[in-house]
Amino acid sequence: MYAIAEADLDQRRAVRLGGKVACLSALRRNRVWAGLDTRLHVCVHRGAYDLHTAEASRVGRPATPPRSDTNFIADPGAPRVHWQRSALQDLSTGPSNHRDWLTPPVASLRQAVLCQSEEHAIASIDSALRTGFVTAEQVALLFSHLPNRLQHLRAEIDPTADSGNETIVRVRLRRAGFVVETQFPLPGTSPFDLLIDGVLPLDVDSRQWHSDDAQISWDFDKVLASFGAGLPSLRILPRHIYQLWPETLAVIRRTVSEAKELRDFRRGTN
Image (tube, rainbow, N blue to C red; front, side, top):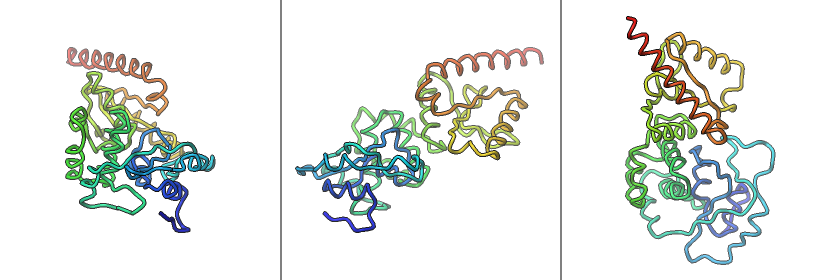
């Protein structure tokens, strides 16, 4: 296999391994949620050998500029190698941005679902639908090629999520027993990401999209609007999801409980 001079680093590494950019790396190139694994994922033919993985491990994305949604090049280190399955040929049909160096959308999404935890897999499917990377018909095709142990994930898909982190919080809260609505509208401001048990609006933020003065002002306005409507609200960051989730969940539980008590008290006094 050969790469043209204009090929980027991931393309060159994949070709050097005799394979294609695949799985999470293929999703990330298309602005689809690809979890927290930033290694290069490559799919090679099931009969491939002598992959030169040591050579491919020595190169990767430079430390600067920092990773972002528009900086998809994989980090240095050993690539994650996926071995081609004959079943993947059945997933190459339908609308596609297929390239000879890139695994087709449904095939790469299947790889990503099998490669990640359930919550990240759901987030990838949500994101793939929201961005138009795949269609609803292609998701049906995807599930026809997933094992029985993962069929229950289909009921948890909701492409209204604005981010993978939002999906993960929604999945965790619903599995914890909460009733969670998505994109909760509030007059005078933009929708909140989630509404928990009908009493607690929640926004899942990131510093990337909430750091400029205009957005910070808007975020404060949303908090005021929610309290003005009699609904206390919370805002969390990725660290509250991945580093402090037990503490975050405890705060959510208490806030929901107290908000329900306040709601019931107001109803009793009217």
